[in-house]
Each structure stands twice: as C-alpha cells, then as structure tokens.
Image (cartoon, rainbow, N blue to C red; front, side, top):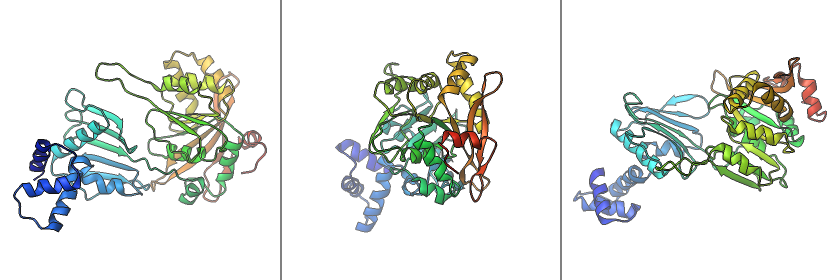
Length: 379
C-alpha cells in the first residue's frame, strides 16, 4: 500500500497532503470506508513525511530521547532512565528509510558513502544516525527532543534537579555575573539547567548563544542564536564553533554562552572572559567537577596553548562549576558545586563548595570562597 501511494504521489506531483494521500489510497482500487481511509491516510502520511512509528513518542511531552537500536528495540527516556517501548518497525529496511528521510529533511546526506549523520531537524530535534555495516545489524537512530519551552528554575526544584533552597544560590550566581560552566555526562540535563539559568538574566542584558546544534531555549526577551554549519558536498561553507565565538564577541554580548565547549573554541572563550565579558557560561562533558580543569587543559593543548598559559587564562576567566549526574533511579540532579582556585604550582583546581543534599545543599570547604563570590549571600 505504501509503495503504491508513494508511486502515485510521485507521478502526480505535489505535496503529500492528507487529502492527496487519501486520494492516492482510493486510486489503488481498494474498497475502504471513510474511517478506514482517514486512519490509513494518517499512518501513510506519517511514513511519507513524518517520523513513522516514532511519531507518538516524539509527540509525548515527557520524552527527551528516542533511541532505535533494532526494528524491535525502540527506547525512550522520560527523565527516569531508558524504557523499552512497544513500538516495532516492520523490518531493518524501514528503519534505514526513516533515517535517510529524516537526514534529507535536515539537508544532509546519509548513504553507504557517508554512513552517519549528525544534524538538526526543522523543529529543533537533534538527529544522529549510523547505517550498517558501521552499525552492526541495523541502522541506529537517536533523536534528542528539544522542547519549545525551557523549564523554569522553580520547575527544576520541584523535579528534584535542584535541592530545596538551592535556587537561591543559582539566582545569586547570575546576579553576581560570575562566569561558570555546567559539567556532566551525556543526558544529565546540562542544556536544560543552563537554559533555565539564562532565563534569570536581567531583561536588559543581551545574550549571544554559540552552539554546535541550537538546543538552548532560554525564556529571555533578548537572545541572539548562532549555529555551526557543516561543509557542503564540495567541502565549502564550513562554519565552526570557533568561528561563532569570534563573531559573537563582535555582537556586543552582555552574556556570551557556548552551548558545549569541546574544541579550539575554548581559547576564544577564555580570552573573552578575560577581557571584560563577565557572566559568560557554557557546558562541558566531564565525569566530575574536579575533572573540569583537566578536560579544558586537554582541549587547550590540542588547540596549541601550553599548559601554563591555559591555567593562567582559566584561573582568571572562570569562577564556578556546577556538576550534574543521573542517580540510580535515573533522576538528574546537581551533585556538586565547585569553586576554582590555584594550587601552589600555579595550576587551577576545583574546591568543593556545596554538594547535593535531600533537604538542601550541604556546605563543603569551599563554601566560604563561594559565599564571598556571591556577595555574602547564604545558601
């Protein structure tokens, strides 16, 4: 039925609107009632221009990730860890077709010559797909859903991401215009937390975002969003995150934000934060807050900056690290808050200031320094 509808639409031309899909169904010579036609038309249109069997999952407001590892292995994350769903594709070929169609919608190529893709769909959903034989057995498809509305800080407190009363520290962090990084592993909620925090920035400030994939959605009246661009088929037109950071500095930002620090752009970001751009922030992958200096050192060294210079820039540029984890139940939460200081050798290290507590943040040895940075405000 799907092949017949696809062929009819291709021959007749035009968009696969619901009415045209219904007409194509009737042209197949099948005897169907009106209710059957409408139901079949919805399913077929989903296969032709939607996300197929994944559409109900992507429409679920609680779903943040949809992962397909085999035709009968479709997983979702609703904030409590991965759950196996009842969604099943007819076969491996249908998973491949969906991945290729979504890649085409994003303006990207996905075939045997280029067997993987990382792109953003028009609605903001982040797409990653890998075809066999690189993906053994079946096409692997990952969809990160970006919701149009950012969570508020109060909602993150209610969800348990921020402990009771912890929002006072985070609000003070924004008021004090401290530069900070949100660290954590994949899926720990770094982008969600950063979006919520940027919503606290004063309405008179101009926020300029530089991102690999536009995922930040701060609820703020003055946001400029910049997104990287891959090279075209001829290898031209590449726009890197490093390029965006440099352009952002010329756009009079009150807050410069790098969606994810993971390459040479770390040099431009640290340089910017050392030249009057207070309150800058971003995210970085790290196993713990204490590992952030080493992570940035590795990025800086790869970009050609020696260790001493990197730590000198880092010590003057950043003040705080907020580290997120997912606990055993799958809940995302701020595990620790660290401040940065120099050791006797002149290298930057982090010092625990606050750690997660069920009733409130628990103060650690670095709390005095953090309180000083926050202007004396209590946690």
